[in-house]
Image 1 (spheres, rainbow, N blue to C red):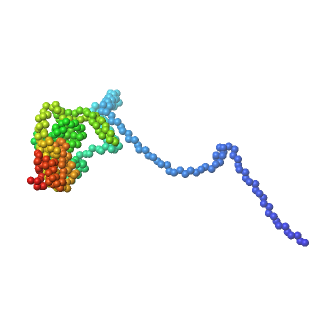
Image 2 (image 1 turned 90 degrees about the vertical axis):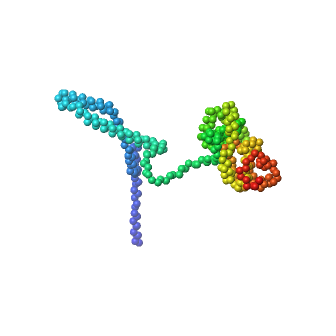
Length: 361
């Protein structure tokens, strides 16, 4: 039998693994490590602003001393024969140059000071002074003022003999107010509120009357209503009429005798309130202290806001709180027909009818 040929078997030889190198020291290990690549961006160049160097201006005395030294040196050198003798006049141009330099430095210093002032103004937000501008002749538009117009109280009674005598309406108002309320004391706020006039003028007139001795002031305990209906006591300055003044009685007769000067203005003021049928003056205006009412107004469609302002202005001029009776035409006719005592007393007593559209008589 023929033998089969044996298959050749490939022998695989395993290669020995490379051993890792053992580093002896830490320094060597650091050297062997690969360095990390760090990418750096472009460097920012910060340019600092150069500081301004301000040369101090030398005083004239120092410049003069330096020039004198220069002149002395030149004379010594001329005496030795090193330099020709320089006359004294040759020092003048040097003096001029020095003075020019001094002036330039001084001007620079002034400019710097002006700039610093402007910076300080900007920080403090102070508005700089406006330069005077030449006005050009021609038509110019006037800007409307934004100031709130102060509502002046209307004058209904007008300027009588007293106002012309004293040359001041606020002073007469004050005198009427204190003489008609001679037994009462008032705070300064209450006086200003009732008289409805310019506060500054009233204050100055009040001080004048106090200096004369007509009015006096003192401190008194006043009771005020606090929170939750509780009352509080506070000490405050109070003004009152001086009863010990020499001419109190004479002034009282003169002031209380003053009546309504212009009745036309008063009638025009009442007609603006609404459809007025009857307007009667009694009590204080007629010189009757026993009367219950000072004014009687009868009409329809009366504006109550205007009516309140009208009465307040009248009270400020008179210097006393007024009692007013306001009725509609129906109510008045009913009361008049029923012979109401209140209405009959007003019409039969001391009174002056200014408007009569009801046909009473």
